[in-house]
Structures are given as structure tokens and as C-alpha cells.
Length: 308
Image (cartoon, rainbow, N blue to C red; front, side):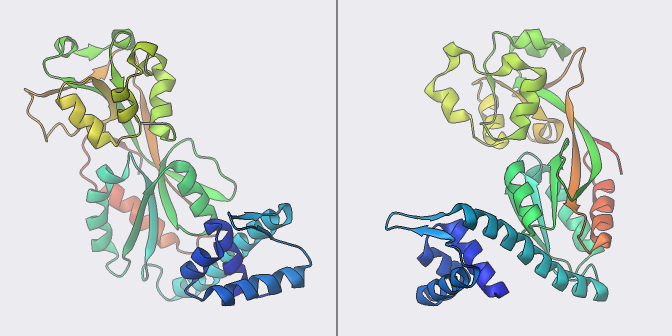
């Protein structure tokens, strides 16, 4: 059994196709197929159900591939430990961030990191929390930026800042005359939200259940908007389609004239989120975490309350 064979079976499990797995591993399909068959014979189990339609993992294959991912992550950690013994801030950092944080934090974060660690280029991925979590645990990412709570075995978190949520509405909307918005004010309004899978959507619905689309609002427009980015929703608010709730860093009050948009806090409640770093306990480059922490502490984000 070799690490190469383990990489092959993980690739087949992810691609569900021997040809695409071979391309991802930069080998020919016969080479990969022979290696997978040889590993199955060595282990004495069938890892994949093969058919013309697709490749599926057997129950034994599920367990073996899961263990293979852990073994590959640990093998990668050996190389990282060796690199870290030379210079923890030399070499790429694979950084993940959720969609509702990356566009607003990274423009401040990246220049600060480049200044503090010029030999540590960032490989950045935006994705959902669940996807980033899996990639972190597999070793495909080194550090991720997420919203708390985030509780995963073997993972450490560090709170960076608290960020309030604000109401964004057209400046001509009657609610813009109020200094603050009550949750009950939204009962008869069209509130545009991100689609399923975004943790920010769940955080909004937690304090504002009535912000979910009402049956009469289940139009093609509403379905189109759900799943769009915060940037798209913000532009739709500007055009007068409806209202939305945003993290304060995404409100971008400086980008639009007060004649177009109004930003209001909520009355009686202070909804918000805590943004944090997360990394594996075994991550061998603690100086990287300090660089990230310091970069956030020096950021120019004005509406947040920093924890670091």
C-alpha cells in the first residue's frame, strides 16, 4: 500500500469516474485502474461498484476512503512540519472563507498579510461553511474564516470580531423615516435573503422568522434572488425591489448616495455574528495564526468590534 494508491482511491471517490480521477492525478486511466485493483486485492475488499453509468463506493470503500483521507492529511502534515522548522511564514497558505465574509474582509486582510509575511502567498477559496469544514479536516485547507458557533473535533477557533446586522432599504421607503427598525415592521415587507446553505440566512431567520418569504411572495423573482450573492441582493435593494438584512461590512454605505439607500439598526435587539479563525490542532505553523490575528486587528473595518 502506497500514498499514491491512497490518492488514487480518494480521487475516484470524489470524481465518481476513473477517467476524470486519472486526469486529476495526472496519470493515464489504465495506470490508475491497475493501481486501484491492486490495492483492492491487497486489502481483500472491493472498494468500488463499477458500472457504465457511474462509480459508487461500497460500504467497505466508504470506510477505507475516509481513513485514506486522514492518512494523506497526516502525510501532508509531515511535509508542513519540515517546512515550518525552517520558516513558518514561507510557503503558501491555503485560506478558506465563507461567501458573506471573504469579499469584505480580504481586501483589508491580504495587503496586511503580504506586508507581514511576503513569502507566504495566499491560496483563497470562498465556499459554504460545511464545505470549508470538510476541506479543513481533510487537510485541503490550512485555516478558514467562519462565523461562530463552529464546533468540530480536532479544530481550534479564535474569535476575531463581532459584527452587527443592519437593515438595508431604499431611501424612498417609508421605513427609512424611522431611526431604527423593529422586527414587527418587516411583517408585510419583501425581505430578500440568501438561499439555502448559507449560514448567514439561518442567522437572520433565527432573530427574524417572518423574514422568510411568505406564500404570496413565492414568485419567480423571489426564487431567483434566493441563492444570489449579497452584492446582487444589495443592488436589487438599490433598484427598489425590496429590503434585506446584511452584515454591516457588506452594507457598503460609502458606495451609494444617501438618495438611493438607507441603512438602519434594529430597535430593542442587536442581531449580529462573531467571525472567527478555525484551524486543525495539528497545524504546525502557529506563527501563521498570529499573522492573521494581527492583520485583522490592524484592519480598517469601521463597523465591527474587534476581539483581537
